[in-house]
Length: 358
Image (cartoon, rainbow, N blue to C red; front, side):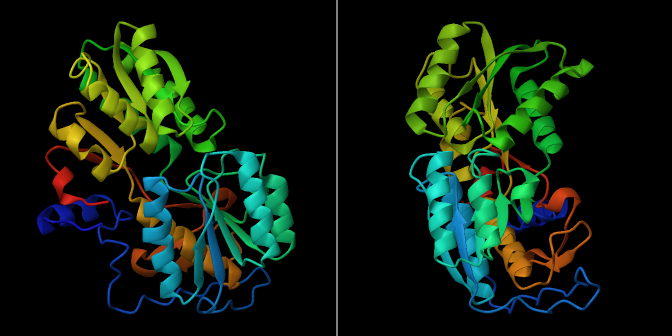
């Protein structure tokens, strides 16, 4: 992600160490630092570098989604090329657990070394993933996790607590001190990450400072633009006193913004969520949205690729305490249940939106 204003870029980097502001598609000309070695499970010294020629496939919730284009093609691909692997992206055109299963089976049959997957359901794809692992593949989840027993590592874009806290804070600030009714426009009903964030949002809303906010409903747009648009429209029809909508999905928040921007509710019903700058720029500038948040999706894919490469090379085992270096992003430590945390979400406003391009 290129920062047009170097001063703003420096501040963002200082605040969010994990949110690198370099465009993933324009990797540094410097040779990335070699991933650091760590002791293997047996105590022996692990390899010092990622093997060349590893086949690493990204399987997003759905292809042709701007978010996954950034994470996979502008992040994961860059990383794989850096350590001289073979990159590919494949997946269904619509978010479907059963469709993901067929792609996992195909990747396993093709002898893929690493499958990087954003799960449409935490349990439905587990059988296929474990079969792929038994056949020799390493499995890394990113964006949306499976049951921990079904993969080797999970790249968490931000903690559920951090995302929930930021979303409630942003909608509270947008709605104002009088509060009122709010609703959530989510992705699919079974999306692991969405459900975790929603539960944490409910916990956050129980705090005294948010006593004037009332969550009245949660609807699902299935990460489909038209359905998300219709669900946003439906919320306003069902809840005429609605003051705000939270949509923690890039497809949903952009669709809801598009609906609000052309309706009588523009400026009256507030919207926040998780979106990309290029999707949301116009809606910040025309006053439909005051602020929204996100991490750098290209960094998420980049980190997922390096984690998969380190696993497939025997550098780490995905156990708590394992350390490795993810190219330009620096050193990471594997946490509980094989989770690797990218960093905290970043808040975009009309004052900083033009400093970002992704």
